[in-house]
Image (cartoon, rainbow, N blue to C red; front, top):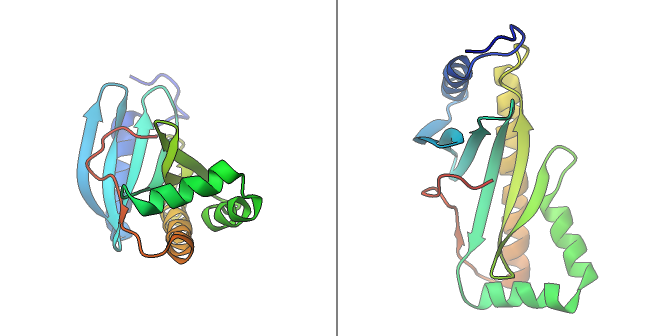
Length: 170
């Protein structure tokens, strides 16, 4: 039970988020509630997004995640990093970032295999609205689409995957 009246309960937040997602025509693909995390995989246009809360936090992360197929694209991408190609890294960073989103690399065994574009939302606070959720969803999807286009332009034809089945990721 939440003793701070300025903070919504987890149940209130979940109900609000589900109602707001419906209001902006975003489909919930999967709900999850495991250990310290709960949230949703949703679909916005052709893109799956993760909306996740860590129970000890009073915010959620809206995340657009992409991973690249094994093979030449990952090898080529990591060669840019290994060479310290500052022009490529600058352009990649420009493609994946904006003033309202965060950006991080997904690493496996020391190699870059994908990227996450994220934005925090604050649904536990009473002034949170459907507009805040819509802005976050649109921001990460727009930036993710630009990043994918940059990767395809730079690395050639590639297959991009989104980790819908992964439950806890950010």
